[in-house]
Length: 111
Length: 112
Image 1 (tube, chains in turn cyan, red):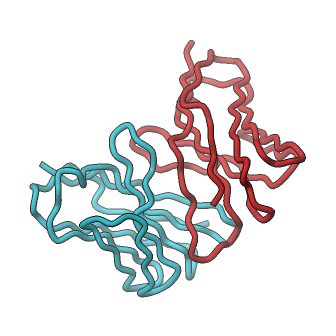
Image 2 (cartoon, rainbow over the protein chains, first blue to last red):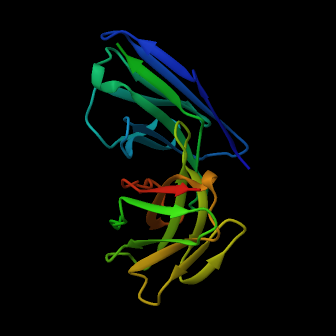
Image 3 (cartoon, each protein chain N blue to C red):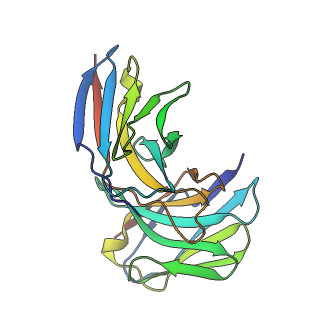
C-alpha cells in the first residue's frame, strides 16, 4: 500500500511571502495526485490534480499553483500568500480501484 | 460527478448503531459509492466502498438499494472515538483526470 508524505507539518508565513509545500508518494507508480485545502470548520476544497508528470489541472482560480516534476512528487506553490490561504492542505493519491488516500496534511497559517 | 446530500450533523450515544444516509439521485451507471471518515487535523480515511446491495467490512456496512439513488453507512455500536466527520462520495473507479469531490459531510458526535 502507498504512503504519502507531506512537509512541513505546520507552517506560519507572513502575508506576501512565498510558499512551497511538498508531497511525495511511496508504494505506487503513476498515481493520480491531488491537492485539497480545508479551511477551519469547512469541507475539503479540491485545488489541483495531476494524472502524470507535468500535467496539472486547476479546479479553483487563485494565487496558488502546482507542479509535478517527478512521478511521485507533487508541489503546491504561491508567489505571494494571502490571509485567505490559511488552512489545512492535504495531498492525496488515488489508486486504480478508486480509493483515495490522504497524507497527514500541512497546517498553514498566514499572518 | 454526481452530487451528494447528507445530513449536516448527527448525535448518538456509545453502544448505539448509527445510520447515515446519503442521497445521490444523479448517480451514473459506472459510479461507485465511497465513504470516508475524518478526524480533526487529519486527512480523510477510507471506510468502505460499494456499487450495489450490501458491503460489510470490519468497520462498517454499506447498504445500497436497487435504484442506487441513496446509500446508508451503518456503524455498529459506536464509541466516543467514532466522533468524526463522515463524507459520502460517488464517482467512477479509475477515472483518469477526475477527482473525488468532497461535500460538507456529516459531523457525528458520540456521547457517553
